[in-house]
Structures are given as structure tokens and as C-alpha cells.
Image 1 (tube, one colour):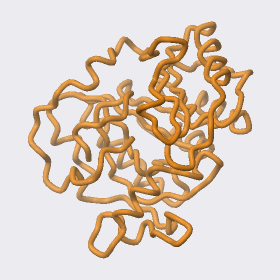
Image 2 (cartoon, rainbow, N blue to C red; image 1 turned 135 degrees about the vertical axis):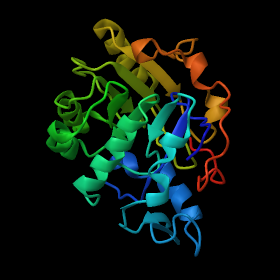
Image 3 (cartoon, helix red, strand yellow; image 1 turned 90 degrees about the vertical axis):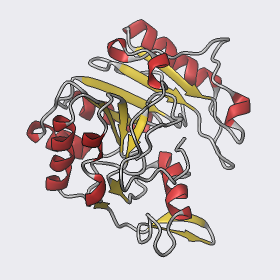
Image 4 (cartoon, helix red, strand yellow; image 1 turned 90 degrees about the horizontal axis):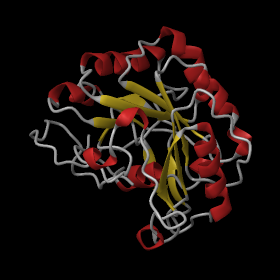
Length: 272
């Protein structure tokens, strides 16, 4: 678990699940797959979960709950906003329903935090939602990279989460007809990295404008590209840092004071 995250829209990460697999075009240059492959050697945290091949990083297909990391939120006494499984997908088809429920049980026991869950497996989310304990502090989101995957939004809408959000990153195509009914927050951004696919600025503007018309909080994360810091975060001359439910961006990156929990993965690079 990373006690401090440089991801702009969260404060910390909790990775009690390891492993994943590619399921749609947004996964092609997955940052989690790259980081996992770098730390996949014998004795390293992601050994058996990813490999580095001649063609680049690759998931092995193994997905598992890591027992010694499951209860980490209980050790953090200072409330914070936590991105759940930034290195995996909680609703992955190879993770048992019982293990997913165990993660929810921890979130409800450590209910002084706010949790942000993000999935591409929206069908499984919809299927399991009635049996999950949706505390008001548990936010649920889906990743939607282009219009072909807008059905994920419909599945999210059917979930029992009190706060529902979209991550439209990487934005790989125009999304002119977003149905934002029941959606509280939209994160938008371009792909970053050496092979980043470019984002047309008008695609981002369209998403922003639709959010404004619908009264939905809009967060522009980045333009991306090979040098994302140089590309920056300004959209039409300003940053867009809107958050749902009154949370202020300035509070997300306040210093955290708790001691390093035993068994955490703070040696890993900060995820972006």
C-alpha cells in the first residue's frame, strides 16, 4: 500500500489484489502491467503475476488476494481517500466472489476512509452488486476508453454504490453521447508513456461540456503523451479539479502522519 500517491484524484492506494489481464483497448499500454513486470523477479512482489518478454510486459493470468495486505486500511487511523487496487481489478473474473466480499468487509470495518474502486469488468459488478455491502464511503467507478464501451456506464448505474464515477482515461476516441444520469463524477485524460496514443483536444472538451450541462463534477487529469509533465493539465487555460460530495482537491495531498504499516509495498514506485 502506498501511503501517499501522486495520482491527482486520490490520496493513497491499497493493493490487496495482484495480477490482472487485458480485456479492452484501454489495457494495451497498462501502467500496472509495466510496473508488475519490473517487479516480477524471484522473490519480488509480482513474481508469478507478470513477466517481461521481448515484446514487453505481459500478465501471466494469475490473480490472487494477498492475505497480509487485506487488513491494511484498519492500521491507518487517519482518514484518507484510498484508490482500491490500482494494480489490478477487484471484479476480475478469476477472483472469487468470496474474496471480493472480504475486501468489502474490510472497507466497511475501516469506514473512516473513503474508498475509490475502478473496474473494467462492469458486467460482474452489476451481477454482484445486490450482494455487496455498499457503505456511503465506498465509491464505484468504471473505465470507459471510447464509445464502444459506454455500456459499462449502464452497468455502473445499476450498482448500489452511493457515489458513481467514470474514468475516461485513456480517452481513445470521441464520446459525444454520454448518458450521465446517476453519475456523480467524471475523470478524463490522455494516455501517457512512450507509445501513448494521442487524444484529440476536442474529445476532452466534449466530455467536459457534457459534464457541465449535466451538473456532473469534471476532473481533467492530464494530456498525457511521452512527457506528460510537459504536456500538463490545463484545458482551455485552466485546471479542472472538481470532486464529488464536497471533497476538496487541496485536502487529498495533505501530509499523512501514520507510521509505515508492516508488510506494505512502499518500496514500489509511485503509481501514475
